[in-house]
Image (cartoon, one colour):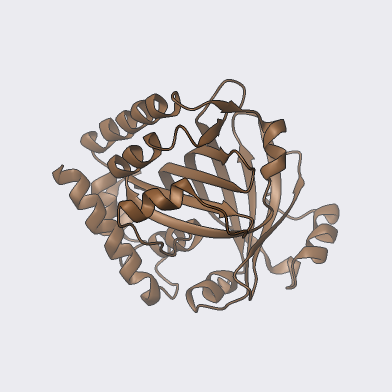
Length: 286
């Protein structure tokens, strides 16, 4: 894929493309993996079966976007308070997701317009286990995230009869209008607190792609606390406050679509994309 093909799909985010597609970026990509593995090795383990107690399918989400270097510093300081998910001996898990929307990006538009109640539909594969789920994420008017999912034999690139019937029970719009829009891959570590009331996910090496374009976010980590809403002390949130990091909105789907498609409403995401570009430039200077 050449540079011109990717840039022709974008009106914003050109700096992100330039930052992420270079020999230096490839080296940073590998170096990030190495350092993340080193930090992850310091945590005690928790298995998938044990983590069922912290599934948190109905939860409150708090997100932070920060440079990988700062993320590694913060995460290393959490080793006494959390266990790390290990899947088949791997503390780093790879995810591949296919997002769906209507031809006119109605779900994307609900999000960027700030609608209190909104949905995402995606097929997610957990590459270590090869498990695949079709998922619907519902952001409620009470600012909670409710996730529903069913296992599928493979990536659900179209909606079969059984899938359609399930979707109609959890998704309030017309199922027949959904179509694949964007692939997203990333590497994740998952931390679980001792009380099973909180999970912290750390996503790095994010890539967004469609048929004729691809973009990577180099040197940037998306960290999210998923909590059941109880007022319990959180070492992670204490660390964020100590680093003077403020929560911010970040949707992989919306950021990816805004970078890959030129014909969508994206003005309200401009500030987020500019922050990502500034962060990427600072990483490059470092």
